[in-house]
Image (cartoon, rainbow over the protein chains, first blue to last red):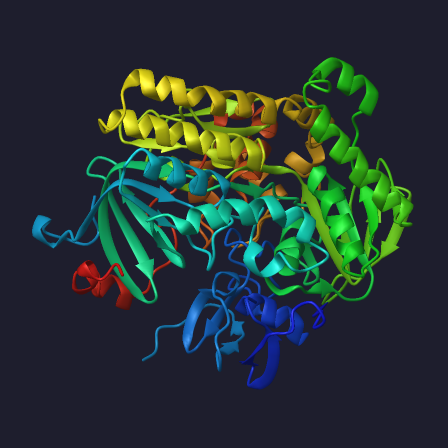
Length: 98
Length: 469
């Protein structure tokens, strides 16, 4: 879990992590928002269902795949937060909607 | 090879030089290329220029935890922004056809194609994987990840923080965390003795400035009261749903966040995907593209500069970017050979100076064999497909001669990261099992799309072809 330092990054943006409203510093990635939210995981893996949080934060590892504004499998660390962004966890493998 | 049929008439924009990456190498190359009169496109995945070392510098520059380290980047960014350069942040290169010079980009939900006479890959470095038991547990991250969180959002890990591993970044991050109000514990895995390594590797006199800076970081962290445990081996992250402790031979450190680091290596995903010739760097223990002194690669249109070419740090990246841009100016007929060589002198000198200490650093922080090829069978190597060291050894024993064969056996390297993170470990484990040098087993051959794109983005590729701006 991470904490912000509002004295040094006063500007914030409201996003929704798993439906819960959260103020995060401007410039945060969606992955950073999840780390601030204290969620125990951002996704469960497609193979064994084990929980994951971001590993690299720079677009290499793809461990931060999440559903952002309704689009699944996005690299949360590469998406900068915007006002009202909805960030949701992924459970297991994606399925094509029927 | 094009996934999207695009007719010539639909190719909207053409540049003299396209640069992939707006880090120190990319920015410096763009500035020099503009000075040579080239039209320049810079695409970068991040929201602002700076690369990783100066990531979000325009935001982080005022943060007392980072201000000192960001200052040189701010100067470079200001020069970059002031020039007439077509800069597209938040853009992902998902395919590159070097023969036609076509770049396929995804940006804001759309894809588009542009062409360039010359293309410079300035894609930087990535952290070496640190595949210890338990490294997939939530709460375990790379050290660079925590630094990026600090730079982009000013945030720090709460609770007890353990840094484990080795390398210059560890001491830099430790100082930044301390300034940001977090006192970590450092569990260092360094095995090489400092003095003997320095005498053997050399460079400590010509690289004295960098050495002094490094020693300063070590002294400052120790003076601030950071506890340092040296010579740790057999690291293991423990916890059930989340990391709770780092265990190592002879000790255990409880932690809420564990930050691992064993150095960096060139990010070669794109340079390998387009088939550039690569060489094995026995000193930095990584593959790197084969380049001439100006960064020109085995393909007539492509150059590579910065840490994506060879690990040298940001000052070396700036100099290498300038050299590649001058060479582009010559190749595209804007400056003469004599002019290129005259202007290149200062950059070549700066490059030498910036790299002076590197042999010492490479030798001092050489990762141990247990980091390169994890000994324990159950350790996960491929985080995406959850492939273990044991299964990889089995595959190598029954006939997987290299990483590309192992893919077919186990799916390692076939998950969403496409082998970016596991590639070096997969090769090292196979090499160890087969008892051959790692360069002999080869490396993954990545393919486009380099990053996942949606069907919607693909379908819109032709419609979006004229929408670069």
